[in-house]
Image 1 (cartoon, rainbow, N blue to C red):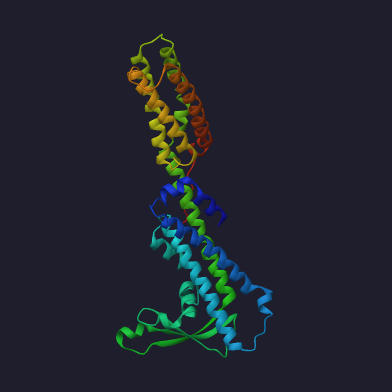
Image 2: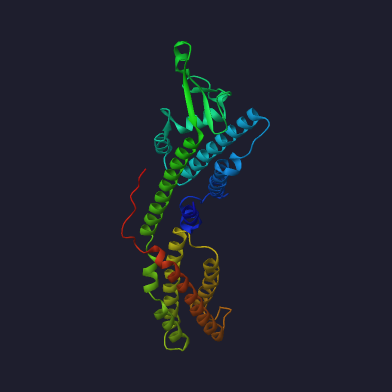
Length: 326
C-alpha cells in the first residue's frame, strides 16, 4: 500500500485521477486506502494468539460476533479496493474477473464472505443462501448448508449442499486476492504516469532554450544602444517563452504552490517592462525602475529554472512501460 500512497500523492495523479473540483475522488481514494490498512490490523488480531486464548462465557454469542465481524472486515476490504480500482480508471468487469479466480468450495470467496456476513441479504433468485449450523461451528470454522436458489425460477424447492469453511483459509484467499488487485492498481498508475510524462516531455526543452540572451538585448536597449521597439520585441519573446512553460506545468499538474507564486511576480515584472518599452512617456516606471525590474526578472527566472530542473528528471522519457497483468 505504501507504493500506492506514494504514487497517489504525486501531482500527476491529482491531474489524472483526482482533478474534480470538490476533491471527492481524492477523499474517497484516501478513505479506501486507510480502510484496507486498518481492516488488515483487525484481521491480524483475529488470527493472533491473544484472540485465540480468549474463552467467553457465551460461546454462541462470541462465535457469531467473531464470524460476522471477520466477514464484515473482509467484505469492506473488497469494497474499498474496488473504490481504488475505479478511481484509477480500471474496468469493473476486469475487477470481477480477477476476484472470481479466488474461490473455495467451487464458489468465489466474495460470495462466501457475503453469505456469512449477511445471509438474509443474499436470498433470492441467482444467489445462494447460507445457513450456519451453530452446534458444529466455531469462531474459526463454519459448518452449514448452502441453498441454491436457482430452482426458484422454475418454482422448484431449492436444493441444499453441506459446506465447510475454514476461516483461516478464507482469509488467506482474500489476502491473495487483495494483493493481486493492489498489484494491478500500482501497474496501472505507473503506466498512466509514464504515458503522461511522455506526452508532456517539454520541460527539458524549456531549460535548454535559455532566454538570458533576450535579457541582454533589453539591457542594451536601456543603455540606449537599441530602440524602444527593439526592447519591446525581446520582452515579448520572454513572455511567450514563459507562457509555454506555464502551459506545460499546468498540463502535468505542477503549476501550483511556490511556482505559481514565482509566476505572479514574473508576469507583473514582464508586463511592467512591456508597458515601459511600448511608451516610456506613459509608463509609471522610470529608467531606474526599469533596471530594477530587469534584474528582479533575472532573479525570478533563475528561481523558475531551478524549479524546472528539480522536476525535469521525473519527466524523462521512460525506457519501457510496465506490462499489465490484469
